Image 1 (cartoon, rainbow, N blue to C red):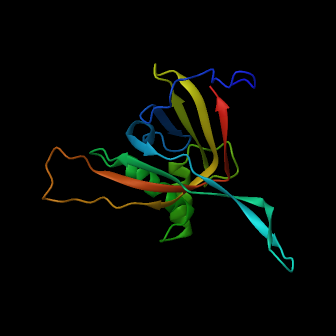
Image 2 (tube, one colour; image 1 turned 45 degrees about the vertical axis):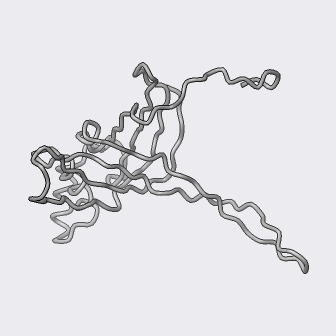
Length: 176
């Protein structure tokens, strides 16, 4: 949009079904991801007290909402299991030896000293399925993994899904 014309240069709308998600650490989620959010951000604030009115002052700390994904679960349960193993490699409930063993087996993200973390990239596609934007989430790690709910009242054609939440250091936009 230019200051003189106030007409946007690109009049195409962003479509909610045109995306690919990839984690450096868990490859199968890319194929099975059904939905993802670009998290909101909030900026803290302080208050300057005066006798008549409190004046808000912009803070210097950003708070990011969690990254949440919904994904289908394949028959081999691999997409759900990869996230579960990642969580166990961070905080195993059995022993330190199990945690070290899971970390060594599960992680493919060895370029970093932060083996509990992984970068994630949301690739936003145009209407013609060309990459137009990358949203990179830096140093993500899972904070919750939803249930797998079996139910005999459902049809055999229904697909099981689960939800996972991730914390991260920050995210950034990059033109593709």
